[in-house]
Length: 182
Image (cartoon, rainbow, N blue to C red; front, top):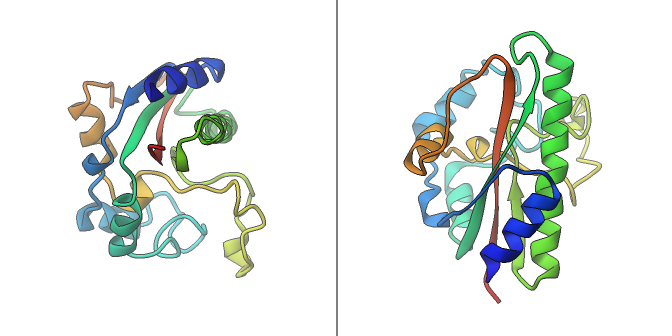
């Protein structure tokens, strides 16, 4: 039943992939969190929903363990992924809003405690207010990414038979919505 609803909601948002996801596959790992700490993306300590401000791995595992269902979502958009930084950022926020729409639709459909996980860092506020030490102004909309929770997204995508490769001519965002069945 939930897959029919999730698929319909994803289709409304032009999301190209909507797959059943067992939340038990989302295992936070120290090695993934260590990649965050290397700060290659520049978000360490600069986003409320990125490490270390997001919390530790035990907190992530505790939150993930609360869910009994989920869907993995992917959305692609044609653009020059190497050179169009503005387009990449815009597409990240677009995907974030699509995940929120699926999350809200599942919640309206009776799926409890729906929680969306986005691709990349939250980009709703630029710069994030964490930089200034201020609270998040959009806590009802801001969401972490799967990677920020310490989950190896590339391995997860490969395990699910989904494309995990970088493509220079398009950007592909992956996220999910977790929930508890009514």
